[in-house]
Each structure stands twice: as structure tokens, then as C-alpha cells.
Length: 113
Length: 117
Image (cartoon, rainbow over all chains, first blue to last red):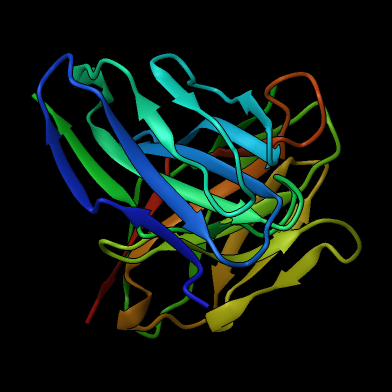
């Protein structure tokens, strides 16, 4: 089991550029989510999905899009990057929902200039 | 809405001494509480969780936490710390973001545990 994988590990973008952060899990988990981690802020939920074809917003969804076409993958899209989106992004998954043990990926460090 | 307050941003402790990391929460729904640990440049992993039942919860690496409903607290403790416990510790509560069920976790800002030799 690879668990939860994320690519890339590190990315530098210019303001206005778009990109997709990839997340995949091989544990057949129904629930997947994206968090951002900023210094002194803890982690904040961006978007989550309870199954293929179903997504919803978390605490800080503005500027991000998600889709869930398969159980395994849950990409996060930045349509027009802004310096305020400089952060470390973590993907997590669990069998069914937010009340269960979350398995986190290693993170993607994003710098927007 | 739910919230988590970790009262200390940084806790220095000597090796082999006991430690307590404090966490207070607020939630309008049934409470499910978690402690996660993040080692440098890694993702988070679960230390322990409280869903129901006994208020004293034991986790990995010798950590334990006590759920106190009247004080809305979930403090993390270890009787004797080791250098390898140096990490960031996050308290979290499950909650609702879209008016539905427990959709995700609300995290505290974290406590950096520093073990001094």
C-alpha cells in the first residue's frame, strides 16, 4: 500500500497561473479532503468529497476547485494563483467521513510569487 | 460551528520529564476529538481519538488524553518524554461545514513540543 500520495512535492507559480495538485489513495477510501497549513494557523479544510461525483466546500474554499471522478483520485485546482495561496497543502482520506481516522499525504509546498 | 484552542504555541520540556499539552474545544454537535502529530517535513498521523465511552484514551508512543465534557477539554499527556517526541501536535474536533454531518476536522493552531536533553 502506498497510502496517500501527492504530487508535486514543491511548486513555484507566478500570480495568475493555474495548476493542479494531485492526490491519490489506494486504500479504497470513500472520503477524501484537502487542507492548507499556514504558520500559526493549524490546518484548514478547503474541500472534501464523500464519494465519486460528490464534493462540498470546507472552511476556506475560495480560489480552489475540486472534482472526484474516481474513488482513488481527488485533484485540487487553482484557477488563478494568488500570493495568499502560498501554503503547504495536505490531502487526507478515510473510509467514510470526517469522524474517522484521517490518513494524510506528505504534502505539497506551494509558493506563489 | 466548532472551534479548537490550543493554549500553548510552544512547550519546552526536559527529556524524561512529564508533559501536558492543553486543548479546549467548542462544538454544537456530538463531539469527536483527535490528537495528531506532525514530525518535521512530514504529513500528520493520528496519535489518539475520542469517539465515545471511556474518557481516558490511550494512543501510540505512550501518549494518553482525557476527555472532560464539563471543562470542554481534551488535554494530551505523556509521563516521560523522549527526544524523538519533538514534533508539532494538533488537537482537532470533527464538525460540520455545510450544515450536514461531520464533514471534516477543525484543527487547533498546534503546539510545538521541544525536548531538551
